[in-house]
Amino acid sequence: MKIKLMIFDMDGVIFDSEPIHYNSKLRILEDLGLERELDLSRHVGFPSGEFWQRILNENGIKDVTAKELENRQYDYNLESMKNEKINLTNGLLELLDVLDACAIDCAVASSSDKYFVDKVLDYFEIKNRFRAVVSGDEVMQKKPAPDVYLKALNECNVSSADALCIEDSFMGSLAAENAGIRCIGYINPTSGQQDLSNTFAQIESIGDVIEYI
Image 1 (cartoon, rainbow, N blue to C red):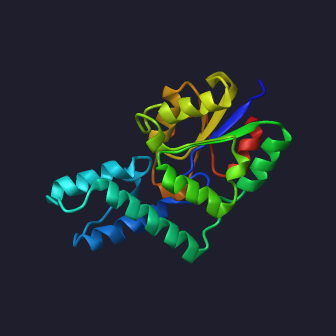
Image 2 (cartoon, helix red, strand yellow):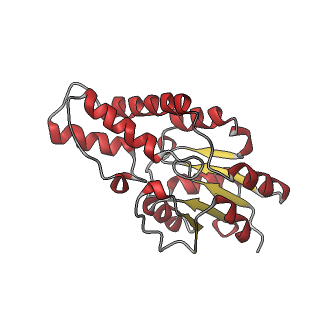
């Protein structure tokens, strides 16, 4: 069956963001005067706002909000992307070209806030490649809730049966499952050991998605 829509997670799929998020978190912990080692795999796919709220609660910090720290993290991320000249995931542009040639629409469904998602897509100059871009703060609940995926389906006027998605984390794949969308698991080595057993296929290269369209 020919699909009508391919939905991409952003962090860890469109570009390798997990090390950037990790380093930004460490930088903010230092800003707060805290020393903490982070297990990267425990935080992949989880909303940053929840992480910062937990840090504030555990340390009794009341002079800054979780939202302010989340926005600071996004700003640090963007700074690092520019300084390090971060590139798109290898093979992504070629995949987008194939999807376009096959008349398959593309969308983004991310747990990150619109502020960060838009700036990332603008940085890579690929925003116009997606029919819909849905961010975590545009829906009631972030992943693993299905909200971002359901909104993307609605904006593209496509049923879940006619869509595929790509995720690199357990939380993301669970969101896809909850939305009734078949999910391809992208094994991103910097995302830690992620349980992708509920995806129907696992790939180690984004270009391998072509086999499933």
